[in-house]
Amino acid sequence: MSRVALVTGGTRGIGAAISTALKAAGYRVAANYAGNDEKAKAFEAETGIPVFKWDVSDYQACASGIAKVEAEIGPVEVLVNNAGITRDAMFHKMTPEQWNEVINTNLTGVFNMTHPVWSGMRDRNFGRVITISSINGQKGQMGQANYSAAKAGDLGITKALAQEGAAKGITVNAVCPGYIGTEMVRAIPEKVLNERIIPQIPVGRLGEPEEIARIVVFLASDDAGFITGSTISANGGQFFV
Ligand code: NDP
Image 1 (cartoon, rainbow, N blue to C red):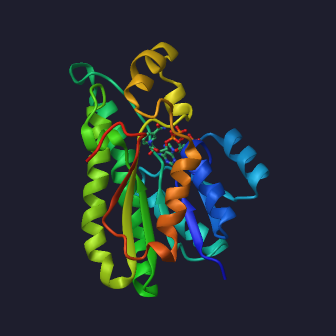
Image 2: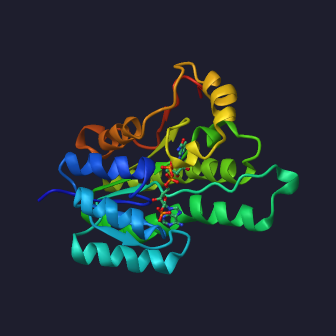
């Protein structure tokens, strides 16, 4: 039987590309989302990938959402922590709400999702946890103290869990995309995108969601069994670690 993969924020942008690519690679895929029912239902109808609504910043919602996925599809063997938000502001203007929302979704959400599937992965001696961090978690970004902190935290939990999971057949890795042409990035004013952002990308263009999805499919595969605790950067040459 094919493996089960759960993708958070799997109905739009990079997550939708990941869900679709995993399905094409033969996985039984479940796609989580937060609240955009219209988009999620259209995605489900178009791809045949079942969608499940819950908020990754809520631990109980994650535990019961995962239980529903496992009852309907099977034990989660591949978890892709992709859901993420931005609430940008310069630090002197950043509100505690903007800080907390981003930390709770982009960092605590990774704990909330990984913790409920971890024991099952240990028991079955197999698991793949792949978290979508960001170039801005590697290098920091002005106007994104909250986002940069959360995404750097994602790299920390990845390295810690890689050590805990290694003896149990669980690999834990992160992908750090640069600027990818999704709604999150298209929301940046076009002038800023064309005059400030794209000129900083040596390959001269935004990345495509499918370029991130292909990395995830590889990390999920048996071929990637010796890769754990790693960060794969995909940023068009914008930043080297
Ligand atoms: P989008 O804004 O296009 O999509 C975000 C997805 O996450 C949606 O499916 C959304 O659901 C879901 N989501 C948001 N908050 C929650 C939540 N609390 N609980 C469950 N699901 C949630 O994002 P991108 O595709 O651009 O980004 C995907 C990931 O990649 C993020 O983690 C982002 O930080 C990271 N990233 C993106 C980059 C880019 O250039 N786009 C660059 C580097 C990293 P709904 O549709 O219901 O709102």
